[in-house]
Length: 235
Image 1 (cartoon, rainbow, N blue to C red):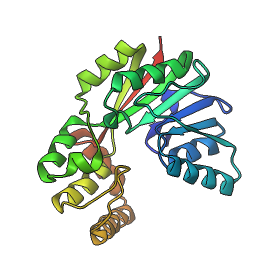
Image 2 (cartoon, rainbow, N blue to C red; image 1 turned 90 degrees about the horizontal axis):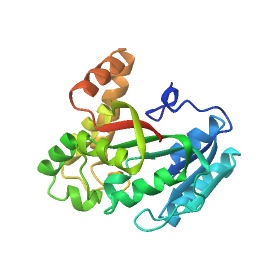
Image 3 (spheres, rainbow, N blue to C red; image 1 turned 30 degrees about the vertical axis):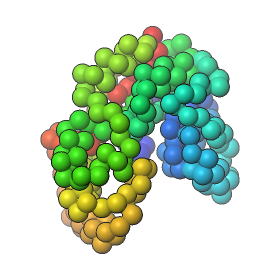
Image 4 (spheres, rainbow, N blue to C red; image 1 turned 90 degrees about the vertical axis):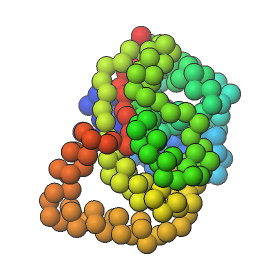
């Protein structure tokens, strides 16, 4: 079962498991996981985004904890307290990614599980070529070829079990916006060229009505995925 591209079968958690969403931003993923019955903590370095998470959790009647945590320097407040950590599309923003990986591992109980996702090196290169301000706007300071990512995660103390290529739909979305050189914020929201966004989602809806969207996305994940998802456990 997939939830926001996370393969819950590989995480293998029971309802009630304590999960840390490290770098949760507005907390969309945190909320979805809380709705699956997990005890969620969302951590981010932006207080405004954490307020969005708190407000949405309250609106839905969910009990979610929000931590202000800067992965560039801070330590996780509760070491060894989590059954799982999810850290998706975060490490590319952190200059000292080894510190961040170390904190991710430190948060886990022995044998605890992790899901880590980063942009693929191929799509990052393409977007940088298309958009002269891509690095500046995205605040992506790291690019992770697959061998480097796996090596660094194992160096941090994780045992890698499974790797997936995902998010081809966002490959296409960002190809459009990078070709148009759209301005966007560091969370990945375009700030202009709304017509392109409407066009993209209109085409996706048409493909879904024709029952071909899922097949095309699966094929695209084999050719040019946007993200690399790694599943591992603390050794």
